[in-house]
Image (cartoon, rainbow, N blue to C red):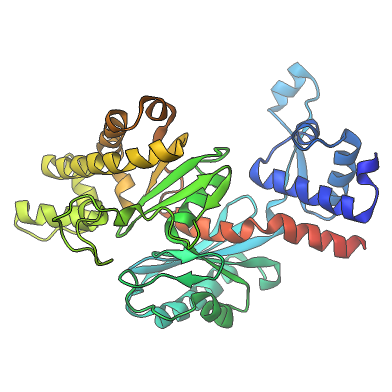
Length: 399
C-alpha cells in the first residue's frame, strides 16, 4: 500500500484515475488497477475519496436478469456527470452556437443564432456572451461550477499563444485576441481552438472516435478542415496549422481561394462550391441546405456533384493516410449529411490511391455528433482539464 502514502503520491493517483475515467468511463476497479499499474487497495482508497466528494459514481453492470444469472458483477465506475461543467462556443463563418455540457459529454442546453462572424468579430463576441448566459440559465448551472469556456473558430489557432491566423480566412479578425475579448465578457477562463480540432476532440471523447488512439476528423462545411488525433492526443503542429487540408492545392489553375492560393480543396468540395456548380446546371440559385435536400431526395445531378467531390476528397486524403496511418477517418460538417453518396467515393479513392496496408487499416465513417461536434469539442477543450481541476479541488478539501 506504499503507493497511497504521502500527499504527493496520493494526489498523483487521484489525477491518474480521474484522467482514466474521463477517457474510458464505466471501468471496474480491477480494470483501473491493471491499466494504471496500481494495487486494488490503492484504487479502492482513491475511489472512496472521490465518491465521498461527489466526483465519481459506481453502479452494477448489466440488467437485473443478467446479474441473477452470473452473480454479482464488479461495479462500474464513471465520473459523476454533474461534478463539473464546461461551455462550448462554435464560431462558424455565418453563426455563433453556445452549449453547456456535463462531464459525460451531455449537452444540457444550447442556442444558435446567425451572425456575420467573418466581418464583425466584436458583435459575435457580444452575441456569444448573451448565448452563454442563456444556456447556463436554461441548464440551471451556476458559473462557479463551470471549469471554463472553449471556443472553436473557423481558422488555424496556435494553442500555445492563442494567436489566430486570420489572414485571408477571417478577414475582420486581424490583430484581435479572441480569448482575451471573451474572458473579459464571460468572466471565465477561455481556450480558443480551430473548429476542426474541436470537432476531432468531440468525436474522440464522446462520439464515433471514442477509444480510438489515431484518427482524423474531416469537417466539410463552409470551410474544410482536418483535426488530427495522434496517440490519443490532439496534434496541432508548431504554429497550430496542422491539418489545413482545405488549403491544399488540388487544381493548379483552379479558382482563387480566400487564403490567396489557387485551386485549394475547399474551392472544389465545400457545400458552397458544390451548390454553385448546380446553379449553372439548374439555372437557379441553390443554397448549401438545398444541395443536401436534393441529394437525399435522389436528384441525380446533385448526387453526381457530391460523389465527384467525394472522390476529390479521397484522393487528397490518401496522402495523409499514407503519412499518418490512422485507424479511423470521421467525416463531419454539413456535407456528411449526404451519407454514402459522399462516403463511398471517398473510400474507393483511398483504396485506389493509398498504399495497401494503410488503406486496409482505415475505416471511413460519419460522425455521431452531427452539427454538435464542434460546440461539444470546444467544450471538451475545457472538460479535458476536469481531472486536474477535480484533483486540485479534492486536495483543498482534504488538506
